[in-house]
Image (cartoon, rainbow, N blue to C red; front, side, top):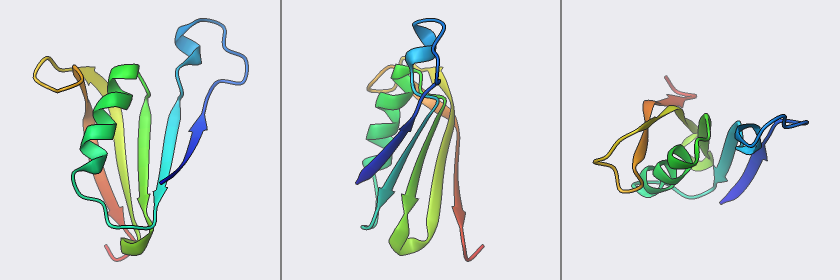
Length: 87
């Protein structure tokens, strides 16, 4: 998938260097893929991770990273929603 990464224009601290938003665009159906990738981004502290599933006209939004000892990467997103053009 193609990705766009949004960061602070002028990071004032090391924490500001973490992307604010990562958007991936996929022209193929997605299944478990965002869960694995989302865990990595949550562990890195990325505030929002979006996956645009073009073929299904669906936007998956992962928001609010939280530590989670049971997750493979040690973190997960507290909010996960899918928005569809057909909803």
